[in-house]
Length: 70
Image (cartoon, rainbow, N blue to C red):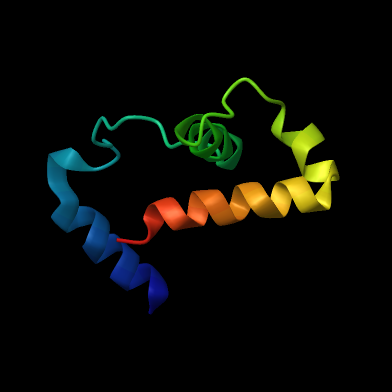
């Protein structure tokens, strides 16, 4: 039964089967962290070093989250 559904699906796809639209690559989560730090003026800092200092990291997280609040 499953194979029959799959064959029907593939048949209806026609020529566009297997072709994917061109889109820009997704950001990695590390890229998002770097962009957030850039927005608050800490772009040159190493985020993994900052994360080791819990108080400093919490202050940065709070600062970034306040940017998202309208």
